Length: 178
Image 1 (cartoon, helix red, strand yellow):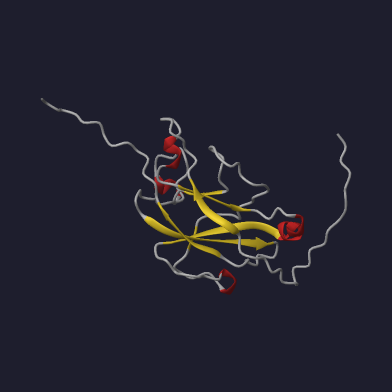
Image 2 (cartoon, rainbow, N blue to C red; image 1 turned 60 degrees about the vertical axis):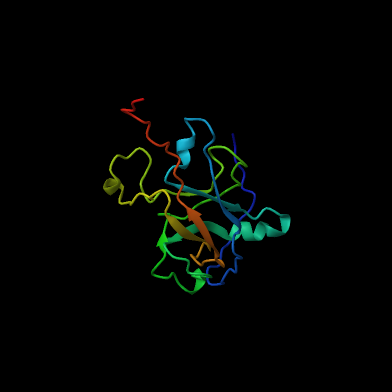
């Protein structure tokens, strides 16, 4: 089919865009009670937040290029990434998290970002991916900010405390005698 341009937009990166903090920042479980899917949550944390959707928020939504997610071992309290990134924060994503629409309310795709410690699915060796696996039971604090096209951060959402889930069943008993 044919495409027809609808208009043209100019972005002036010399004018600071003031973006509010993302709202509704929370963790979600994407696995279900089935044996096959419950492992989807093991040793990784899934996140979602509300994307600007109301008509009066469209200018803001267009201004958002992506999101950055940061993790800390300790609760740093209120953090403003516009003032700089504290050295104790570790960036979770390699490139901006692009969220073009809301995630489904439930199911295996009900998230916008995931922290798996940088260990990619299907890799046998964490060192090969440069990551360190998250350990079930460990607690982390997360911070989220939107970015505009010039790389400026919005106000920061967080801290959001999250415990790394352990969905592995315990080992089956063996060598049990009556």
